[in-house]
Amino acid sequence: SYVLTQPPSVSVAPGQTARITCGGNNIGIKSVHWYQQKPGQAPVQVVYDDSARPSGIPERFSGSNSGNTATLTISRVEAGDEADYYCQVWDNSSDHPDVVFGGGTKLTVL
Amino acid sequence: QVQLVESGGGVVQPGRSLRLSCAASGFTFSSYGMHWVRQAPGKGLEWVAVASYDGSDKYFADSVKGRFTISRDNSKNTLYLQMNSLRTEDTAVYFCAKGGGGFCSGGSCYRFDSWGQGTLVTVSS
Image 1 (cartoon, rainbow over the protein chains, first blue to last red):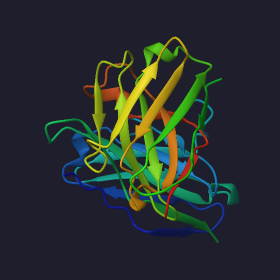
Image 2 (cartoon, one colour):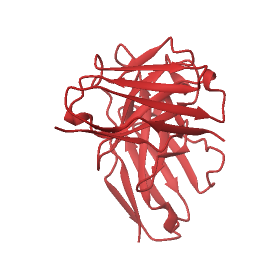
Image 3 (cartoon, chains in turn purple, brown):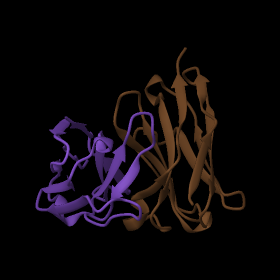
């Protein structure tokens, strides 16, 4: 089955740029979605279809996807961005649709 | 706005059954695929199952296939997850999530644009 690999943790100072990667075999041909999850809360979609932003999500959140790596970029990081971030794709390599999540990345704002 | 409210969680012994419900409002429920996604304590997200807009297409993760069934009642705007033969490894918070489209053979159905707050299922003797 398809595997998505994320770094367990990323740390960044306030005001700087955080980049969270999501690696997968030829992931560039798939649509990648990103979710933010704060402790005790439900996930929230922050980027869909590689780089589209849902309404209400700040422009500081952006995404890209090429080759074997998708990236979520958070510009001008704020304390409130501290959370777990998950990438996700739909996979059709088996005989039925499947959903794959990355293992998650904990973003720490220093 | 979209609201999804799960219910039905609780403590259950291994081998027993439980049914979860997800009441939806704020959107045309009958037009969208709906999912269940779970999260074991301290772990990441795991997709469980999907039902297409009319319930005609249903798909499951290998980990629950043959034990869990998904259904929906579009007249009541409610999604269900029937969980049978529960195992300790099924212990998790179960979220319902709205897909981005209605047809679930692929594509936009498989992005989750709204989530409920979740209901905790604990399988323990």
